[in-house]
Image 1 (cartoon, each protein chain N blue to C red):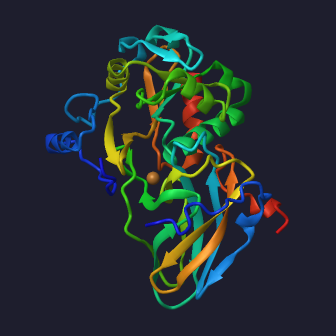
Image 2: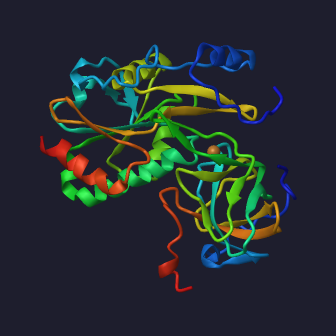
Image 3: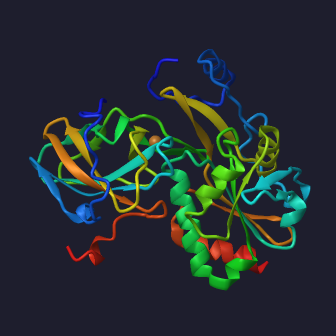
Length: 199
Length: 157
Ligand SMILES: [Cu+2]
Protein backbone atom coordinates (compact mmCIF):
# COMPACT_ATOMS: atom_id res chain seq x y z
CA UNK A 1 0.00 0.00 0.00
CA UNK A 2 1.38 3.39 -0.83
CA UNK A 3 2.29 5.70 2.00
CA UNK A 4 -0.18 8.43 2.60
CA UNK A 5 -0.60 11.38 4.84
CA UNK A 6 -1.95 10.61 8.29
CA UNK A 7 -5.70 10.43 8.14
CA UNK A 8 -7.53 10.66 11.40
CA UNK A 9 -10.86 9.01 11.25
CA UNK A 10 -13.86 9.86 13.35
CA UNK A 11 -15.88 7.31 15.21
CA UNK A 12 -18.72 7.17 12.68
CA UNK A 13 -19.55 4.24 10.45
CA UNK A 14 -18.40 6.16 7.39
CA UNK A 15 -14.95 6.39 8.86
CA UNK A 16 -14.93 2.66 9.47
CA UNK A 17 -15.79 2.06 5.85
CA UNK A 18 -13.00 4.43 4.82
CA UNK A 19 -10.49 2.51 6.92
CA UNK A 20 -11.59 -0.77 5.38
CA UNK A 21 -11.17 0.61 1.89
CA UNK A 22 -7.59 1.40 2.87
CA UNK A 23 -7.11 -2.27 3.51
CA UNK A 24 -6.47 -1.82 7.20
CA UNK A 25 -8.36 -3.37 10.02
CA UNK A 26 -10.46 -1.08 12.10
CA UNK A 27 -12.23 -1.49 15.33
CA UNK A 28 -13.47 0.40 18.27
CA UNK A 29 -14.72 -0.66 21.61
CA UNK A 30 -17.68 0.11 23.76
CA UNK A 31 -20.59 0.09 21.31
CA UNK A 32 -22.20 3.40 20.40
CA UNK A 33 -20.39 6.41 21.88
CA UNK A 34 -21.92 7.46 25.18
CA UNK A 35 -19.29 9.64 26.82
CA UNK A 36 -21.45 10.37 29.87
CA UNK A 37 -21.24 6.76 31.07
CA UNK A 38 -19.03 6.14 34.07
CA UNK A 39 -16.71 3.15 34.25
CA UNK A 40 -18.19 0.04 35.85
CA UNK A 41 -17.00 -1.09 39.24
CA UNK A 42 -14.14 -3.52 38.74
CA UNK A 43 -16.24 -6.30 40.27
CA UNK A 44 -18.79 -5.84 37.48
CA UNK A 45 -16.19 -6.05 34.74
CA UNK A 46 -15.31 -9.19 32.86
CA UNK A 47 -11.98 -9.76 31.11
CA UNK A 48 -9.03 -12.10 31.08
CA UNK A 49 -5.72 -10.49 30.23
CA UNK A 50 -2.08 -11.52 30.55
CA UNK A 51 0.52 -9.36 32.24
CA UNK A 52 4.04 -8.71 30.95
CA UNK A 53 5.35 -11.49 33.20
CA UNK A 54 2.96 -14.00 31.63
CA UNK A 55 0.48 -14.15 34.51
CA UNK A 56 -3.27 -14.20 33.93
CA UNK A 57 -5.15 -11.17 35.26
CA UNK A 58 -8.91 -10.98 35.81
CA UNK A 59 -10.98 -8.30 37.61
CA UNK A 60 -10.98 -10.39 40.80
CA UNK A 61 -7.20 -9.97 41.01
CA UNK A 62 -7.66 -6.22 41.40
CA UNK A 63 -10.22 -6.29 44.20
CA UNK A 64 -8.79 -5.52 47.63
CA UNK A 65 -6.33 -2.90 46.43
CA UNK A 66 -6.95 0.48 44.81
CA UNK A 67 -6.30 0.45 41.06
CA UNK A 68 -4.73 2.98 38.74
CA UNK A 69 -5.06 2.10 35.03
CA UNK A 70 -4.11 3.67 31.73
CA UNK A 71 -4.82 2.57 28.16
CA UNK A 72 -2.10 3.03 25.56
CA UNK A 73 0.28 1.23 23.22
CA UNK A 74 4.04 0.92 22.98
CA UNK A 75 4.31 2.34 19.44
CA UNK A 76 2.91 5.61 20.84
CA UNK A 77 5.64 8.27 20.84
CA UNK A 78 4.01 11.11 22.76
CA UNK A 79 1.01 10.53 25.02
CA UNK A 80 1.97 7.09 26.37
CA UNK A 81 5.58 7.66 27.44
CA UNK A 82 4.54 11.03 28.84
CA UNK A 83 1.74 9.51 30.91
CA UNK A 84 3.87 6.57 32.06
CA UNK A 85 6.59 9.05 33.14
CA UNK A 86 3.95 11.02 35.02
CA UNK A 87 2.63 7.85 36.67
CA UNK A 88 6.20 6.84 37.59
CA UNK A 89 6.75 10.23 39.25
CA UNK A 90 3.44 9.97 41.13
CA UNK A 91 4.37 6.51 42.40
CA UNK A 92 7.73 7.82 43.57
CA UNK A 93 6.03 10.77 45.30
CA UNK A 94 3.59 8.42 47.02
CA UNK A 95 6.46 6.28 48.18
CA UNK A 96 5.58 3.06 50.03
CA UNK A 97 1.85 3.97 49.85
CA UNK A 98 2.05 3.27 46.13
CA UNK A 99 2.97 -0.35 46.90
CA UNK A 100 -0.69 -0.86 47.83
CA UNK A 101 -1.85 0.09 44.31
CA UNK A 102 -2.54 -2.08 41.28
CA UNK A 103 -0.95 -0.06 38.47
CA UNK A 104 -1.93 -1.25 35.01
CA UNK A 105 -0.86 -0.16 31.54
CA UNK A 106 -3.40 -1.84 29.25
CA UNK A 107 -2.44 -2.01 25.59
CA UNK A 108 -5.03 -1.14 22.96
CA UNK A 109 -2.69 -2.59 20.31
CA UNK A 110 -2.45 -6.29 21.18
CA UNK A 111 -1.46 -7.00 17.58
CA UNK A 112 1.99 -5.48 18.21
CA UNK A 113 2.11 -5.41 22.00
CA UNK A 114 2.82 -8.97 23.01
CA UNK A 115 3.89 -9.90 26.55
CA UNK A 116 7.56 -9.72 25.56
CA UNK A 117 7.13 -6.33 23.87
CA UNK A 118 5.31 -4.98 26.94
CA UNK A 119 8.01 -6.35 29.25
CA UNK A 120 10.71 -4.48 27.29
CA UNK A 121 8.64 -1.34 27.36
CA UNK A 122 7.52 -1.16 30.98
CA UNK A 123 11.12 -1.82 32.07
CA UNK A 124 11.71 1.86 31.23
CA UNK A 125 9.29 3.07 33.89
CA UNK A 126 8.47 2.50 37.57
CA UNK A 127 8.67 -1.26 38.27
CA UNK A 128 5.24 -1.15 39.96
CA UNK A 129 3.63 -0.59 36.52
CA UNK A 130 2.25 -3.82 35.05
CA UNK A 131 1.72 -4.14 31.30
CA UNK A 132 -1.42 -6.01 30.21
CA UNK A 133 -2.30 -7.53 26.86
CA UNK A 134 -4.56 -10.24 25.50
CA UNK A 135 -6.65 -11.22 22.52
CA UNK A 136 -8.38 -8.26 20.86
CA UNK A 137 -11.78 -9.46 22.12
CA UNK A 138 -10.54 -9.33 25.72
CA UNK A 139 -9.01 -5.88 25.22
CA UNK A 140 -12.39 -4.77 23.86
CA UNK A 141 -14.07 -6.22 26.95
CA UNK A 142 -11.80 -4.43 29.40
CA UNK A 143 -12.20 -1.16 27.47
CA UNK A 144 -15.98 -1.60 27.49
CA UNK A 145 -15.94 -2.00 31.28
CA UNK A 146 -13.90 1.18 31.64
CA UNK A 147 -16.08 2.96 29.04
CA UNK A 148 -12.79 3.59 27.29
CA UNK A 149 -12.52 3.73 23.54
CA UNK A 150 -9.85 3.04 21.00
CA UNK A 151 -9.56 2.84 17.25
CA UNK A 152 -6.94 1.88 14.77
CA UNK A 153 -6.07 4.58 12.25
CA UNK A 154 -3.88 4.22 9.16
CA UNK A 155 -0.72 6.31 9.19
CA UNK A 156 1.78 6.41 6.36
CA UNK A 157 1.69 2.76 5.45
CA UNK A 158 1.42 1.65 9.06
CA UNK A 159 -1.12 2.47 11.73
CA UNK A 160 -1.48 4.27 15.00
CA UNK A 161 -4.11 4.05 17.72
CA UNK A 162 -6.45 6.72 18.98
CA UNK A 163 -7.38 5.92 22.56
CA UNK A 164 -8.85 7.21 25.79
CA UNK A 165 -5.98 9.06 27.42
CA UNK A 166 -7.16 9.59 31.00
CA UNK A 167 -5.79 7.72 34.00
CA UNK A 168 -8.54 5.74 35.77
CA UNK A 169 -8.69 5.37 39.55
CA UNK A 170 -10.70 2.78 41.47
CA UNK A 171 -11.06 2.25 45.21
CA UNK A 172 -9.90 -0.93 46.92
CA UNK A 173 -13.43 -2.38 46.83
CA UNK A 174 -13.46 -1.86 43.05
CA UNK A 175 -15.76 1.15 42.91
CA UNK A 176 -14.80 3.78 40.34
CA UNK A 177 -13.13 6.78 42.04
CA UNK A 178 -12.06 9.34 39.42
CA UNK A 179 -10.18 10.04 36.23
CA UNK A 180 -7.04 12.12 35.87
CA UNK A 181 -7.64 13.76 32.51
CA UNK A 182 -4.73 14.04 30.13
CA UNK A 183 -4.66 17.81 30.03
CA UNK A 184 -5.63 18.31 33.64
CA UNK A 185 -3.20 20.20 35.86
CA UNK A 186 -0.86 17.48 37.14
CA UNK A 187 -0.97 19.00 40.66
CA UNK A 188 -4.44 17.51 41.08
CA UNK A 189 -3.23 14.02 40.34
CA UNK A 190 -1.64 13.14 43.68
CA UNK A 191 -4.65 14.24 45.78
CA UNK A 192 -6.91 12.15 43.53
CA UNK A 193 -4.71 9.08 43.93
CA UNK A 194 -4.50 9.61 47.71
CA UNK A 195 -8.31 9.77 47.84
CA UNK A 196 -8.59 6.48 45.97
CA UNK A 197 -5.99 4.98 48.33
CA UNK A 198 -7.76 6.24 51.41
CA UNK A 199 -11.36 5.28 50.72
CA UNK B 1 8.77 16.25 4.05
CA UNK B 2 11.84 14.41 2.92
CA UNK B 3 14.94 13.81 4.91
CA UNK B 4 17.87 15.72 3.48
CA UNK B 5 20.41 12.97 3.71
CA UNK B 6 18.85 9.70 4.64
CA UNK B 7 22.09 7.79 4.94
CA UNK B 8 24.26 10.48 6.50
CA UNK B 9 26.30 9.29 9.44
CA UNK B 10 24.49 9.77 12.71
CA UNK B 11 26.36 11.00 15.73
CA UNK B 12 24.68 8.77 18.24
CA UNK B 13 27.44 8.75 20.79
CA UNK B 14 27.92 12.48 21.50
CA UNK B 15 27.50 13.55 25.12
CA UNK B 16 24.11 15.08 25.90
CA UNK B 17 24.39 18.83 26.33
CA UNK B 18 23.21 20.27 23.02
CA UNK B 19 19.62 20.72 24.14
CA UNK B 20 20.64 23.63 26.33
CA UNK B 21 22.56 25.38 23.55
CA UNK B 22 20.41 27.87 21.61
CA UNK B 23 20.40 28.00 17.81
CA UNK B 24 19.36 31.13 15.90
CA UNK B 25 17.99 32.00 12.48
CA UNK B 26 16.69 35.49 11.71
CA UNK B 27 14.56 36.62 14.63
CA UNK B 28 14.10 33.09 15.89
CA UNK B 29 15.88 31.34 18.74
CA UNK B 30 15.56 27.57 18.86
CA UNK B 31 16.47 25.68 22.01
CA UNK B 32 15.76 22.65 24.17
CA UNK B 33 15.66 20.26 21.23
CA UNK B 34 15.25 16.77 22.62
CA UNK B 35 13.91 13.34 21.84
CA UNK B 36 13.17 10.13 23.69
CA UNK B 37 15.10 6.90 23.38
CA UNK B 38 13.26 4.25 21.38
CA UNK B 39 13.16 0.48 21.62
CA UNK B 40 14.43 -0.54 18.21
CA UNK B 41 13.91 1.38 14.98
CA UNK B 42 10.38 0.18 14.19
CA UNK B 43 8.62 2.54 16.54
CA UNK B 44 8.36 6.21 15.67
CA UNK B 45 10.64 8.63 17.48
CA UNK B 46 9.60 12.02 18.72
CA UNK B 47 11.09 15.50 18.48
CA UNK B 48 10.44 18.38 20.88
CA UNK B 49 11.82 21.92 20.76
CA UNK B 50 11.13 25.51 21.85
CA UNK B 51 11.05 28.37 19.35
CA UNK B 52 11.07 32.03 20.36
CA UNK B 53 10.18 34.70 17.84
CA UNK B 54 11.76 37.99 18.97
CA UNK B 55 10.78 39.76 15.74
CA UNK B 56 7.70 41.76 14.84
CA UNK B 57 6.46 39.45 12.09
CA UNK B 58 4.64 36.15 12.57
CA UNK B 59 6.42 33.08 11.33
CA UNK B 60 5.57 29.38 11.14
CA UNK B 61 7.42 26.09 11.31
CA UNK B 62 6.44 24.39 8.06
CA UNK B 63 8.64 21.31 7.98
CA UNK B 64 11.32 19.21 9.61
CA UNK B 65 13.96 17.00 8.05
CA UNK B 66 16.53 14.69 9.60
CA UNK B 67 18.94 12.01 8.50
CA UNK B 68 17.72 10.01 11.51
CA UNK B 69 14.31 9.21 10.01
CA UNK B 70 12.93 8.55 6.55
CA UNK B 71 9.58 10.18 7.22
CA UNK B 72 9.68 13.02 9.73
CA UNK B 73 6.51 15.07 10.03
CA UNK B 74 4.73 17.55 12.26
CA UNK B 75 1.92 16.24 14.43
CA UNK B 76 -0.30 17.65 17.12
CA UNK B 77 -1.67 15.54 19.95
CA UNK B 78 -5.32 16.43 20.37
CA UNK B 79 -7.59 15.10 23.11
CA UNK B 80 -11.27 15.15 22.13
CA UNK B 81 -13.86 13.68 24.51
CA UNK B 82 -10.98 12.12 26.42
CA UNK B 83 -9.60 10.38 23.32
CA UNK B 84 -6.09 11.21 22.18
CA UNK B 85 -5.26 11.36 18.49
CA UNK B 86 -2.28 12.76 16.56
CA UNK B 87 -3.37 14.58 13.42
CA UNK B 88 -0.73 15.76 10.96
CA UNK B 89 -0.04 19.50 11.16
CA UNK B 90 0.75 21.42 7.98
CA UNK B 91 2.51 24.07 10.07
CA UNK B 92 3.07 25.26 13.62
CA UNK B 93 2.43 28.99 14.07
CA UNK B 94 5.26 30.99 15.69
CA UNK B 95 3.64 34.39 16.33
CA UNK B 96 5.73 37.55 16.75
CA UNK B 97 6.95 38.07 20.29
CA UNK B 98 5.99 34.59 21.46
CA UNK B 99 7.58 31.30 22.41
CA UNK B 100 6.04 28.15 21.00
CA UNK B 101 6.91 24.72 22.28
CA UNK B 102 6.73 21.38 20.58
CA UNK B 103 6.23 19.56 23.86
CA UNK B 104 4.72 16.36 25.30
CA UNK B 105 0.97 16.33 24.77
CA UNK B 106 0.93 19.00 22.06
CA UNK B 107 2.79 19.67 18.83
CA UNK B 108 5.64 17.27 18.18
CA UNK B 109 7.87 16.10 15.42
CA UNK B 110 6.95 12.51 14.62
CA UNK B 111 9.99 10.64 13.34
CA UNK B 112 8.72 7.70 11.35
CA UNK B 113 11.06 5.36 9.56
CA UNK B 114 13.93 5.67 12.02
CA UNK B 115 17.24 4.68 10.46
CA UNK B 116 18.37 3.22 13.76
CA UNK B 117 17.09 3.09 17.33
CA UNK B 118 17.49 6.35 19.24
CA UNK B 119 19.80 5.66 22.17
CA UNK B 120 19.81 7.64 25.38
CA UNK B 121 22.84 9.96 25.48
CA UNK B 122 23.05 10.20 21.70
CA UNK B 123 22.15 13.11 19.47
CA UNK B 124 21.10 13.76 15.89
CA UNK B 125 20.48 16.82 13.69
CA UNK B 126 17.07 18.12 12.69
CA UNK B 127 16.62 20.84 10.10
CA UNK B 128 13.64 23.07 10.75
CA UNK B 129 12.12 25.05 7.88
CA UNK B 130 10.31 28.27 8.71
CA UNK B 131 8.06 30.19 6.37
CA UNK B 132 9.96 33.49 6.81
CA UNK B 133 13.23 32.77 8.58
CA UNK B 134 14.20 29.85 6.37
CA UNK B 135 16.17 26.82 7.51
CA UNK B 136 18.17 26.08 10.62
CA UNK B 137 19.74 22.83 11.76
CA UNK B 138 19.70 22.04 15.46
CA UNK B 139 21.21 19.21 17.45
CA UNK B 140 18.72 17.05 19.28
CA UNK B 141 19.64 15.27 22.52
CA UNK B 142 18.23 11.81 23.01
CA UNK B 143 17.04 11.55 26.61
CA UNK B 144 15.63 8.52 28.39
CA UNK B 145 12.18 7.21 27.57
CA UNK B 146 11.06 8.54 30.95
CA UNK B 147 12.40 12.05 30.35
CA UNK B 148 9.99 14.96 30.44
CA UNK B 149 12.51 17.42 28.98
CA UNK B 150 16.14 18.51 29.21
CA UNK B 151 17.33 19.69 32.62
CA UNK B 152 19.23 22.75 31.46
CA UNK B 153 19.32 24.55 34.81
CA UNK B 154 21.52 21.76 36.15
CA UNK B 155 23.54 21.24 33.00
CA UNK B 156 25.85 24.14 33.86
CA UNK B 157 25.16 25.99 30.63
CU1 LIG C 1 2.70 11.86 16.41
